[in-house]
Image 1 (tube, one colour):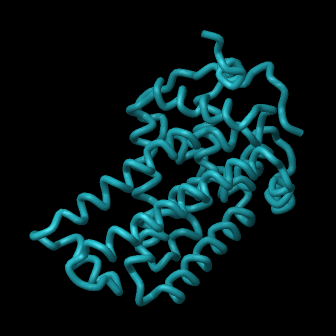
Image 2 (tube, rainbow, N blue to C red):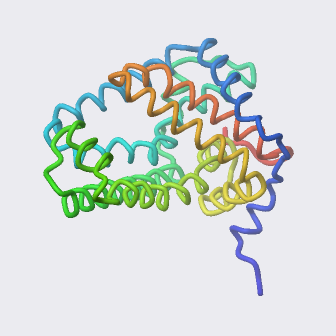
Length: 261
């Protein structure tokens, strides 16, 4: 059977071998990038925190909706960090790294727009699924975090929380596998969206344990950022964005292939 052009294009990118604990190194290098050029990252984190505060103010009595919106944030976060990938790339190339570099990465670019729309679709699907599940099967109305904890999480007569987590993981796993290196790759190299997604899947297949650790670190640190009244996101969100660039650079060998200008 003839292979698709996207698969052939994806195989232009070799997958590098990494040890299990390499994700900790990505966090260290991401932190170094944030400290070297803090303004774009902190502004990025501040905008995310303010958006989260807006969500809370609008849906503060509808936690059945808010819980899905916040967890859905994890699905679309990679595309929101595009500007910070550009900052890390500039630091790596020893070029000027500043707010202008981050903003320039948001120029209209068809491939990134397509990928962003796909992630937005996935995030919206999870928000609707989460809201339908909680409103349809919770034994009592869920209007605030205390209701969610009492009615969903700690309800021994129901398995709603386990089902909610399982459905979230079922959706999040393929989205993570499709995006873990795809967006930095699209920013950095001249490659199609499907080829970038296939490359991302090849990376996950080659390194299931390190990438599982990486996914856990992303989730835990993001939850910490949200649990600190969203203030922690101001630092944690850009830190993870810069670290994600280094994950891409460690995992994908792009030597000899055309760069994006």
